[in-house]
Amino acid sequence: MEPIIVIITFITILVIIFAVRGFKIIPQAETMIIERLGRYNRTLPSGVNIIWPILDRPREIHWRFKKTDPSGRTIVTSRTSKRIDLREQLYDFPRQNVITRDNVTIEIDALLYFQIVDPKRAVYEIANLPNAIEKLTQTTLRNVIGELDLDECLVSRDTINAKLRGILDEATDKWGVKVTRVELQDITPPKEIQEAMEKQMRAERDRRAAILKAEGEKRAKILEAEGIRESEINKAQGEKQADILKAEGEAQARVKVAAAEAEAIRKVAEAISQTRTDPAHYLIAVRYLETLKEMTSGQDNKVVYLPYEATAILSSIGGIKNMFDQTPGV
Image (cartoon, rainbow, N blue to C red; front, side, top):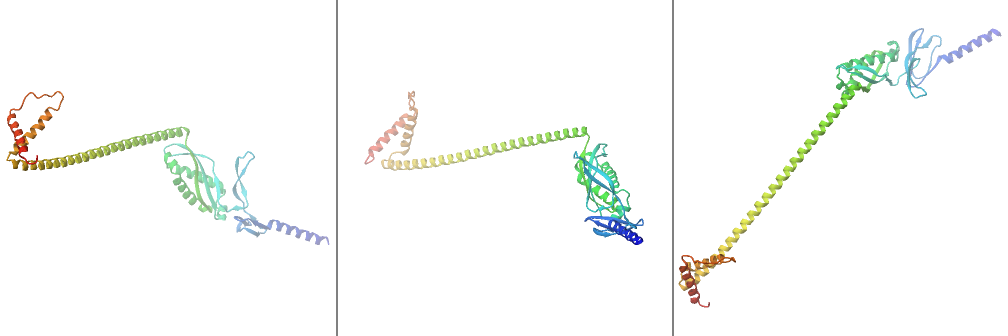
């Protein structure tokens, strides 16, 4: 009985070992490389998988892990792992000094997003995948920044990101890795360069402010001059219109006065013709009396002489008297 018990015990131990080491449960978005007798056998999909514990064993891969210490500081560690994460990964590389084309040393903090698309190549084509990606990113970043000036580096982040992503994606393709995005998180020039840039920016802002102020004053003066010109034009047009209306009024008044005088002269001439008296004497006498009235209208005006032809005018006045005497009904 004892040999049978030993055999049963041995078989039970083998079953337990097979159950413990032969069943592999792979979570979603992860995988595992299995080697049989030291050679690649297969890549395990997610779910439950069965392997031979003695013949098959998982192949380990170098991986990078992050953890936070009690003080809240993030610590990045690198160790081997039997499972390969197929999700998109983020590598936050430490700051590094890079020299630009114009010999300015700047600090760059870069972020790299990548994803393993072929686990077999990621395990067998490169010895330490995280370290290789980090060193490749650093050297590529130095080459790209070395072709640009400082000003171009500060304003061409999208161009740098696209160029880095293209170069890294092509270089890591043989490793079974797809580089999805590269981001320059921060670019820090030296302190003296920052001070010079701040002074330059301040001077540029002052220059723009002065230009805007000068343009505003120029525009204000132009608008003021245009307003004065429009005002003078309107004023001149108003005065012109007023003068025209005044002249038209005076002309109409003179026409009416002349018409009234003509009518008066006509009636006087008709009356005089009935008395057979010369109308010229009548008109001369009337004008003389009007002129004499204007000459004697002031307080200090005195008439001390008579014109040379006064006798003719007096005879005209006498003719006017005879005319009224001869006019019936007057």
